[in-house]
Image (cartoon, rainbow, N blue to C red; front, side, top):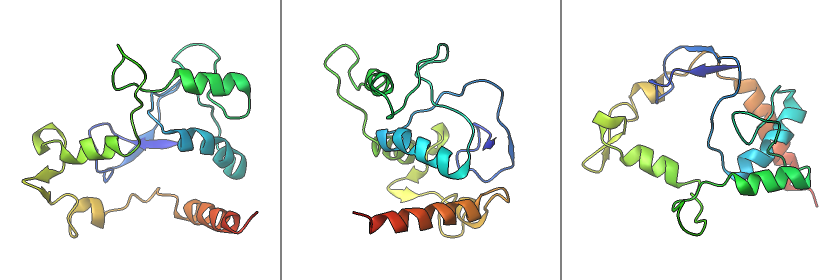
Length: 147
C-alpha cells in the first residue's frame, strides 16, 4: 500500500510506502463495515483497530467488534452526550478552510487547484488503481439487483 504525503491534500504528488505500524484514520460506519468486504474481495491486507495499542478490532462480524465501533465514535461534544460527527462534515470543513490553512475556497469560489483546469483535476497519480475500482463498481452494481 502507498499513500500521499500529509502536505499534499490534493493528492497530486508522488505516493510513497506507508510507514510500518498502525495509521490513525477517521472513517464513517459504512467505510468500517465495507472494509471487511473490500478486504475479502480484493485481498487487501490489514485490519482496523480501535486504538494505537491493543487487539480490539473494529468489525461488524462480532459483538465485540460492534461494541468497539460504538465506543470509537467521534463526538462533537466530548463533555456531553454523544453527538456524532457526520461523514459530510469533514469535506465541508476541508473545503471551507481558508487556503492559508490548507482549504480550497476563496470568497465562495473554489481555488484553482480544484478548478476544471487545476492540478487536482488534471493530474492522476499513476498508481491510482483504476482496474480495481472498476471491479468494485461492477461488484456493487451486481449487488443492487440482489434481494
